[in-house]
Image (cartoon, rainbow, N blue to C red):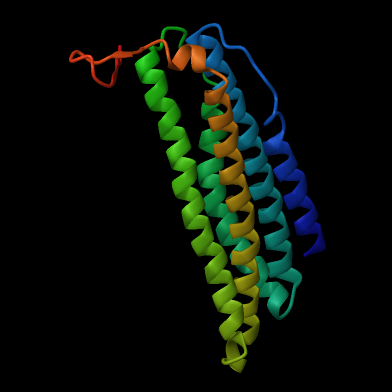
Length: 202
């Protein structure tokens, strides 16, 4: 368990690297290259966590007893799902960046990324809550206490990682957008009536 927490801290540090760095984006291409780099470092952390968690889960499932066995069992399931998401995401982050993406499309892509991480973050709270619930009711079911505690710990650990991962990635992407006002604001103008603003997506 101590090793799991240590790995969790290290991977969170990796995903948060550069969150306060300042960049100047001259073109949409510059912005998208940096966006891809943020996504790539996140997927490296996600894949690394899932791979180590899978290995540890298999070992705990095979060699452990009681809570440890069930903790490993659930970690294997979590890791299988996470790797199914992380590996395609990591491979996709190595694709060449389109140098001709218009500003409107870029903004849609950017806000879509941010919204996805926020939605995922909300789901992560449910995972953590599920873990706490399972541990909370474990003592009421002596025959299944080890299983409920083990599964509960797995939900807590994996939910906590995903919660930090999703919110750190959200803040990294939103921080990048805020540093690119020169790209995001050049499409804003007065509406046709002269009241309010409009945005040109082209």
